Amino acid sequence: MPGTIGLFLRSSDNDYQQRLKELGVREAKRQGFEIVIESAMNDPAKQVEQIRAAIKNAARSKLVGILVSTVRDEGLPEAMIEAAEQGIDCALLNEGSFIDEIHARYPSRAIFAVTSDQTEIGRIHGRQVRTLVGDKGRVLTVTGPLSTVMAQKRLAGLKEILGADFTVIELNADWTSERARMAVERWSEKLAAGAELPDMFVAHNDEMALGIRQALRDASSKKDLPLATANITGCDGSQTFGQRLVKEGRLKATVIMPPSSGAALEWIARARTHGELPPVRVGQPVTSYPALSSLKK
Image (cartoon, rainbow, N blue to C red; front, side, top):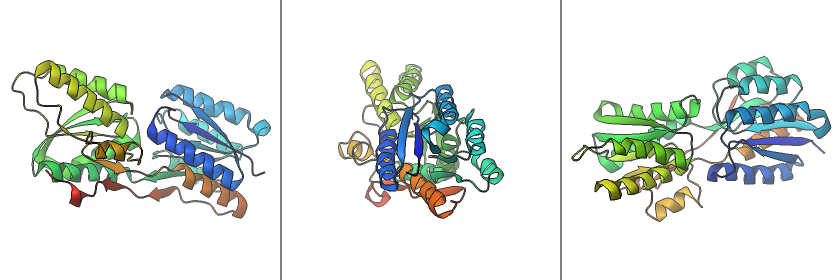
């Protein structure tokens, strides 16, 4: 038996995290690994504690690799170094700025990230805005935690494409629908009659896009503002959630980002079976849904 893989998810009630879990379970079975799954419930300290507890129990559980869908970057580099010191392979299932240093420090271990191009996700958001809105306007974006490289790069990509032609209003949330709803609700309470409203709303994931939609519907009913029919785009784009929301007309668009757990497990298996080490970053494609050519103002 090749050993056990620990899969550390950000949460258990998010569509993308569920896709990471489902693909991870399938690929672990295919590669002959046992898999243990933990959810941090969006608590960064809890996630680090879960990882360290697994490392401490590594000999008994035959832990050979950990996959981490990051809540926050804080504390993770130290935990991954602890794992590498014990000969455990480590994969981030998203972007992390610290992975380069750890990868270089442990060249004989599979220390890497499987990630979509986060800046390109932001660029696609920007192109969706320009396709739906035109050459200038106002955009409100609800970001993930800006302490994470993912959120930083998605925001940078959006601003790169929009440039000086658009005013960008930034609200910060934590990847969850409820926090996005609360952030937009607080923003909407400050709107006065006749206020200039955003032409489009951009969320860093589909969960938050749904939270934006709920907040806008509530604000529209309370203040008689034309917000309920706003253009909203998100990211993750699974067939059962993000793409479905687009088809139902609840979102205008999303970005399809494939789950990364399968590729991470495949690389760990290759490293352990054949000694073939992955690059520091294993890229995955991202695409607009629907295609930009299908979007209409």
